[in-house]
Image (tube, rainbow, N blue to C red; front, top):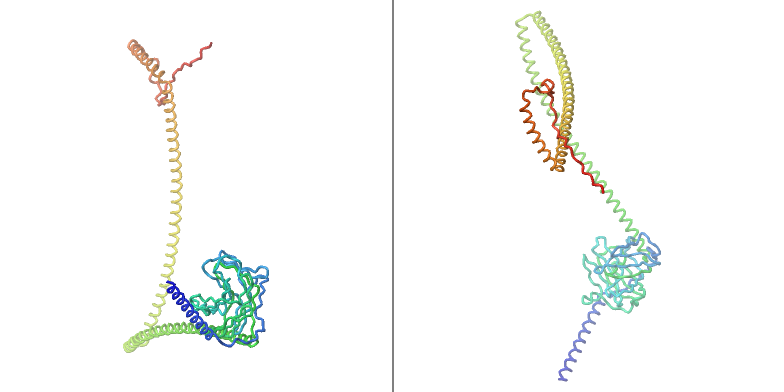
Length: 467
């Protein structure tokens, strides 16, 4: 059993040794890939000097639910509240330098999160599909990655460690790290705290913008952000900028010329269309003139034939007489036509006046009908009001009678009995007084209708018995 354990222990040692050899080989291969002479340019011209002493136009000032980026006490305070995604803080200062040096300081804030990171993003391409990032975490590890399209490619470490490489050059988690990035396209050299870390090439890259890349749920600070270049780099950048401006100006001029040419081409097309229309109109007019000429030629031929016949058959005096008579008739016809036109105008004027008179009579009739309608509606309203008042009055009387009858039901029965007795007595007296003349004659009786009203009933008022 001990023998088997010793064999297993030796086997594990052999495997560990082989892994270390393979890792050393990979590191050596990696160093051979990136091994090249460091950049020896002197970056002595200041292009951007940011102390973060106050808010300015170059750096964003954000206070949102996910981001807080503000200058605070000569430091740029950064707080990424989003817990899943990083954020690139790009400066508005435009970089057109191919040779430049970024010098900045960064430190992570105190937090319990383990995945917080902070770094520098630079060479951000205009299409947003390329950039280079150097970042570090609180475990004294750094990582270099290149944005290719929408994914990152690690330029440090390996895929198993997600590109992270441990380095003693990084300061403790509560101290600032001075990041020194030197670029001479296509070569990039990275220094941290004065110590060289790595050199690599980025092919087919053009000068691009720069800034900070803060990881998810991370707090960080920066004390300053400087950008330097060389005299040749500045001159080259100015020449390239001038060439770019000239190119843009030329492009703008070409666009303007193209626009003017398009406008002229359009106007020429319009002129061509107008010319074609004019030609077609002229052709139609020429065709009409040809037809008119043909008709005139036919008439001339007919008149010539008539003239020839007249000159042959009649003498000149007769012809002149006929011509004068024809002229007189033509003048008479013209006068008659003018008189007819005058009559037509007078008829039109009379027709207009007749229509106006008709409209005035119609307006008068409409107003009269409206007045009669108003009088009728007023009379109907008054009669309706009278009927309603009468009906309400009758209802009131009936209600009073019903109320009185309901309150005096016993008395009403007594009155009916008295009335019946009086009727029986009256019938007896009437039989005795049949021959007696009535006290009132028929002439004295009024024929006007009398409104029926309830008989007054004498009511005995109950009195309280005195003690």
